Image 1: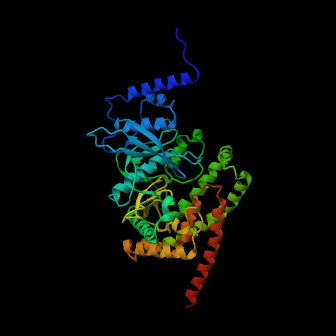
Image 2 (image 1 turned 120 degrees about the horizontal axis):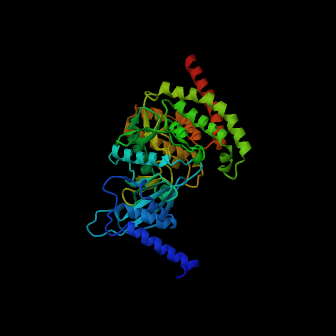
Image 3 (image 1 turned 90 degrees about the horizontal axis):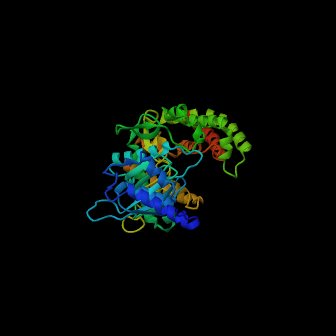
Length: 449
């Protein structure tokens, strides 16, 4: 009986045997599972998944790519954002096959607040916005996706590659003034396009089994229980995380997170960043919570009273349009155009006042250094002029863009952060006190007049 090779020779032989096994599954007669519309790769054979686990990540990604079209595929790292890793898929396309020669696979980064439902929300948002705006909002086309972590260790999406553009953070400093202004105007146009898409609740966008779009649970960077604690009852509660008002949404974000922390403290400690002390963060978070719970309803009701329809309908918005998720054209007559938008995992329907926030790239440079105030004001003027051009000066979107409602936009940003980011909540409360003092003085002056 011949001995089985050991060491490097044995590992090489095992890889060869596994490759042969997978190649049998993806034989020459295999033509792929993509036939013109996005496909889920959730329900692959257990044998295929079991064999795939023995390969390194790039090899596994290449085989997943091959699943789509049934042609050889290679994979290499491409780009990283806070929430996702991106890989380039290159296909060996035979003659007379109308398939892309390059696609991108986006692999979700699993953090303590990661939930596999995030992939469903992201895919749904991408498909909905792309279809509902007939491509006027530059969303990459989705080819395939999976929630499961059994294939690649996390959920993933396979989409178009936007090859003629680069992330804004990599090109902003080198763009001409004219190109930068073009980017700001295009951003305003995209915000206007999304503001025309409305739902009757706050939440993520959800594509159901019948191909209809509705509202699903809000997605946010909030603490989730450990995977083993996410039983059917928890998932049912989570699925109903949709809201009829802004105050209900913002209050519940923190209340629910605090409840999870109280029940799963050990997991909370284990997933806390190394530079944050548990006892200090918990105490600071609890101290701020009551103040926030009193302030939130008041400021939200002000907006509902003064911005028409702001409490009756909610508008599609992508809250993560920033330097890493916006792909910008850098050359030619279209330099500055936004050619693609990534990281749709937290997109959904939100109050109208959240949409017309001044783009973050107007406030901070790619190194997160604050821009000069005069430059920010110039950018705001360009942004507001573009919003008025696309939506009309008396539109609800333009009314909601008033700097007065920055207090609400800052609130939504702070409350969407993980619980231990207490500094942002503390700063917001200080700003809110100044806002209340100024607003109260303004009302007194109006009464005197």
